[in-house]
Image 1 (cartoon, rainbow, N blue to C red):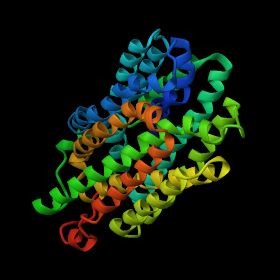
Image 2: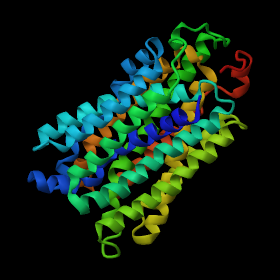
Image 3: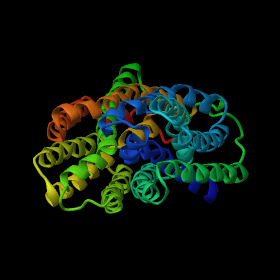
Length: 393
């Protein structure tokens, strides 16, 4: 694929995560503007976005395989930008909930469509996924940084408008530069040897289950870190712009983990590496739950490195074990189940913190990480898989 469309596919991943986290970063300002007493009371209004981020992956993946990935990505850029601008026009929590849900529908397109499109002919798919993951997580860092500055400069509405315009412009350039597809992926002849049903089903459900636990950790941390940072650094740093820069620093450092993990996945087996990353999550969440101040900040970098580092595994398994003709549909089904369940984390984040506090929440995340590590043990070994596979584009 030409350089510019490939670049825009990575930028699209950054925008996808950026838009979903503007609300979480600006929630205190939004709550104040809407006359809501506490930020925790606003968090349930964003659940529609994350629910549709998951459920919308099924139709998005189906359309990507059967209709065309290029067309779907054009819709993604334009729809995401327009819906973000729509969020900026809302006047109360219910309008906000509806507009965020629409944004979630368009954001659902990227993962089951954009990533399979990017890796279609990749010589090193693990490294390609790592670069893509780095871009997505830098989008999270930019969300923390840009939202903090835009809110301080002109208010939370501009924090949605500016990236909305950027997304639409990216859509224009992508439509002009992305080469036309020779045909929908599903119409191509399946080239790889298929896994036997028992291994295919076992692998799929391990992918779904681990994707669910990693998505729970991802959603809770990325949506809660801004307020957690404010609490744990209270008295040390209080300026919103400085807090935004510190949070962006966490995400920027942690983003490098996907690059390293992606490169290693081109060389080493999935199962032992995945288990090690999830085991380290347990350690880092445990340390963070008992820390405050700068010690907590160091632990936060550690647990975000492990959270981000766990992301490339499921995409790599899809590329390695699923033929390109149906990757978008398999990814869409996996994401719908895992993201649909993990969207509940966003709904309960505010109420749980309000009732029990961040320390107990972090202890709970340690348990989620432990569950994920146990699930990985059921993944078939590389030797079991290799006899049924041959290289595929």
